Amino acid sequence: MQQHNLLSTPLAHDAYERERLENVRPAEWRNPRPAGRYNLVVIGAGTAGMVAAYAAAALGAKVALIERNLLGGDCLNVGCVPSKAIIRTARLYAEMRDAEHYGAKIPVDIHVEFPAVMQRMRGIRARISRTDSVRRLVAAGVDVFFGAARFTGSGTLSVDGTKLRFKKTLIATGARPDTPSIPGLAEAGYLTNENVFDLTELPSRLLVIGGGPLGCELAQAFSRFGAQTIIAQDIPLFLPKEERDAAQILSEAFARDGIEVRLNTSAVGVRVEGGQKLVDLVSDDYKSTVAVDAILTGTGRAPNVEDLDLEAAGVEYDTEDGIRVDDFLQTTNRRIYAAGDVCLEHKFTHTADASARIVVQNALFAGRRRLSTLTIPWCTYTDPEIAHVGLYVREARAQDIPVKTFTIPMHEVDRAIADGEETGFVKVHVRERTDRILGATIVARHAGEMINEITLAMVAGIGLRTVARVIHSYPTQAEAIKKAADAYNRTRLTPTIRSLLRLWLKW
Ligand SMILES: Cc1cc2nc3c(=O)[nH]c(=O)nc-3n(C[C@H](O)[C@H](O)[C@H](O)COP(=O)(O)OP(=O)(O)OC[C@H]3O[C@@H](n4cnc5c(N)ncnc54)[C@H](O)[C@@H]3O)c2cc1C
Image (cartoon, rainbow, N blue to C red; front, side, top):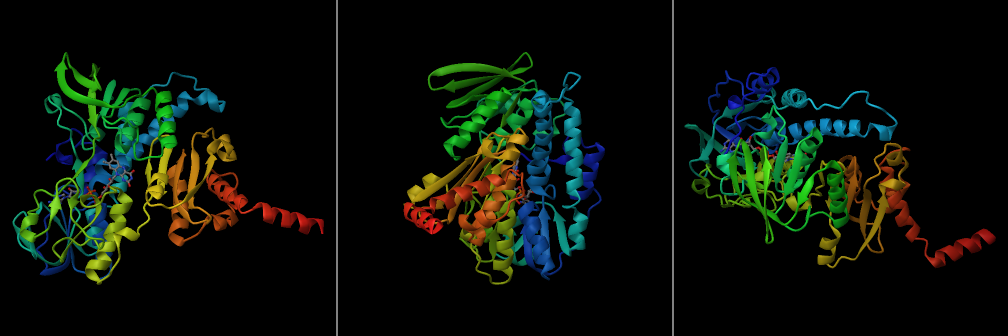
């Protein structure tokens, strides 16, 4: 199993990296002596594990948290935080190149300082690591153990030989990159999210294998830094889960950025020649070879279920889908729960967080909170962003739910026009003949922010009629949502109501 280890990166002596390490894995750390039987032992200190440990300790529980690598898990160290930091700089470069569009002129040639981009990212990551620091956990009353956890029975586990007893346990061991088995790939060397943020030099030519959210976000960022970028995806549809018009808009945006997207294309072999990586690609019957300097794989995530001796605890699992849980996040051992990427279909930081909160209530306070009641939005942070919540039209149709959709293109929104950010749309689906929101897709520069308004409306049971009554500050891009609600309201003006109104006004 590939494991990112900060201590072994070439950047271990960078001041920002030292600060991060001091926060998330201090060198002088000594594990505490186990304090009897814990109310909750948490395995894995990513988002799910940290949220659960804090929440349980705040409620008075005796909590132990075990981490084999770095506190903060993927999100802080090799996921959301570093990716969003470099995406921001990539956007700046794209905007600088587009300066004339905004009536500005950059008086010099734009030169990408890749080491500075990565240094800024490391600075941001170090700063955010303060929130995930061991000091904060200890101050909150959590016993922190560094080491690999494995079960030794249905009520015990050990951390590198130290035995811990528990009433309840949460498995929050996350997931890792699921690397494709392509002959020659391992020998040639490749990047995943676990080492791509250690780069100090920009690869001139990059092949991204896999066109999911991770592949798309990083492909666009690296392309904007100046890497000649190809995405190879083995299925015929780009962003297959998203609505087709959303995927089409992103595909056009990628073409403008100079990214070559090859669909229905599999990488079948890799070899190194003259210092470059030659990758054989097959698209139907067409074979080609591309020469690149780096290969980034983004072909999915595999749950971390091995190495835990789950059999000893009677916890059932699957190496693809992870730990088997019911709607209350309970495993096949009633004292053991799971949360986050190790068991969920939607592998996001906010779902790791939400599922951890469910576990604390259900495991420690006999709660009956269900995973299925959550309304989960998500966003792919490309430019434009694609965000979604609730049902897609195809899902509603599959469930025989009649749907009516209200779509507002961003080029009808004053703020989007003023900002030169007109690409995209807001699309809200309601149940036909009602204003009940079933779902929404937003493609826009700030879609990830805008989707929260729809999510709030769905969770609070607020329909489009009420959204239409909410005053939105002018000019904001979120006005697109208000316009969709206004469009719904206009449908309430049936011919009968219209003629009644006309009669009233005449009178
Ligand atoms: C490049 C990238 C970008 C992303 N961007 C976003 C984004 O913008 N927004 C978003 O919502 N999500 C994003 N994600 C997903 C997000 O990072 C994950 O969903 C989230 O980190 C899951 O949290 P977790 O706690 O379940 O697992 P993790 O963060 O993976 O934490 C699990 C922890 O368990 C530890 N562990 C594993 N096995 C053991 C063991 N046996 N003993 C002790 N410890 C163990 C691991 O070392 C790890 O620290 C991104 C992911 C990637 C890869």
